[in-house]
Each structure stands twice: as structure tokens, then as C-alpha cells.
Image 1: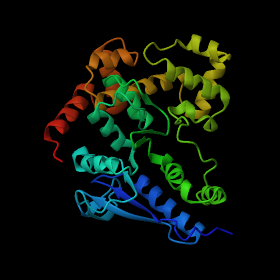
Image 2: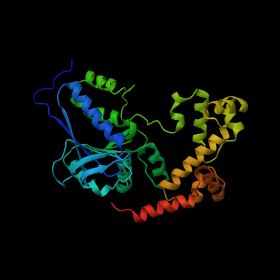
Image 3: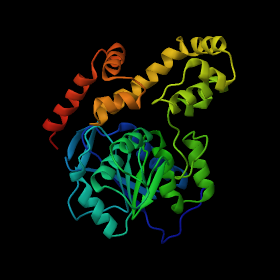
Length: 328
């Protein structure tokens, strides 16, 4: 039976800040976790309101519509503020509220793209920070971030930066765990079908090889070697030697799992990494080519065109136009 909170136990009030293109998975994770926590505790211990600098109906990443209240500067603060990630993150819309929450010693959580925007804008050098592992790799390519990690969450000066995405529910459980019993924490994890509730300092699973449960050990090890050797790709003979299998055996396994050769799979991994660097950074294309194991700009261009039907230059042009025409 769920225990009742003491009469003087405060209700923990969450506010979720979102903007156009918000991550609907993160929003659903926050709202569903708080709703189930209330059901387990038997009272409305946790409340949540949605706010935005663009109040009214706000469109999410999957065209989902959510009604948001206005985020009035200096007014109506919750006990905890969560800023969702998304495709149109404008830091100017929420940074003053973040600073106000810091001054009042109230926790702030920035998820995925919001964490990335915060890290870029504040040029974080001192406290530990994190974001989704995909953006961690891009940030490291773009600048000097000595304290960035690939943990699920990092806290510094009252601001928690976090991976977001599928790890959001676990993060919310961590935020509300001081207000509920350990048994209720476990019950909540079971309600959400979480196989384990990870600590915030646990490492994010990243890259394909991190999903070891999807493949057998031989495939996982081969993919891990590929992902660790993008800049200087391993010859297939060396890769298969390290895996401890014959080239013919590895090719047979890859055809069974992916319906393509390991060499082709390796090249596609490198092209995927190159595309992320082209579209998400302004790193010179020749440096992108070198970082992903292509011997020249022309070799990179051919590989990207064959895979995506567009050249790196055209992809980069779209990025430039977006930056120039961007309006908050």
C-alpha cells in the first residue's frame, strides 16, 4: 500500500517550457511519469503546467498540438523547470527564466537540444555538462568543451543538462524520488516498464554497437571496431582478425543480419557520420572528409551523393540558408 505524505509535505510543482517543434517524446515522458506517480502515491503530489514564450497552441515535432500558458518574466515559477528539446530551440525565450530559477535555488533541467543550445551559448568551461551523445560528438568537433560528458545527466550551479529523449522518464523519476518512498520508486519503474532505473551519471548508450542486445557478440564487436576507427578505416582483413573470425564468416553474418557486406556497412556508417557533421556544423568539408576516412573532398562527395542523392556542398548550402534566415 502506498504511504501518504506527511501533512506538511509540499506539492512539487513542475513547469515544462516548450517551443515550436518541441520533442513530443520528451513531453509525453514528463507528463506520463508525473501522472503515474500521482496514481501510485494516491494523491496529487506532483502538478505540471506547460508554458512557452509563444503561448497558445504550439506545434510539436510530429505536428502534435499542445496549449501552453504564457511564460511571464519574473512570475509564477514552479518548483522545478524542464525545458524540452526540439527542432526550433531559441535560448533567448527561456534563458532569463533559467537564471531567475537559479537565483531562487530552484532546479532547472535542460533536455537534449535545449542542453546543446545552453552549452553553446554559455561557453561552458567549468561545471560538467552533457546532452544527447550525438550532439556531444558535434560539440567536440566544433570547440573546446573540457567538461562535457556522455552521462545521462550532469548538474552544475543548479542547472541539469541531460540527454533527454528516451532517458527522460528515468530523469523525472530521479527528480521526484526525494518526495516518494523507495518502494514507490520501484513501483513507478515497473509501471513504466523500465527494466532498470539508471543513475544520472550512467553512460548513455551511443552508436549502433551500444545496442548489444540487438546482435550477437561477433557482430557487436565488429561494429564497435568500425565506429572506433572512422578516421582511419580498418581493412577488412584487419577487422576480421581482431574479431577472431574469418573474412568469409564475418561476411556471411553481416549478410544474414543486414543483408549487405561488412565493407558496405562500414562505408555507410562513415557516410552517416559525415552527413551529421555537414548538416550540424560548419567544419570545412575537407576536414569532414578526413574525419570520416575519405581521402579527398571528391571521394566524400561521391559517397554522400550515392547514399543521399545530394552533395555535401548542397547540404551545407541548406545549412547556411537556415542560419541566415533563422527567426526566433
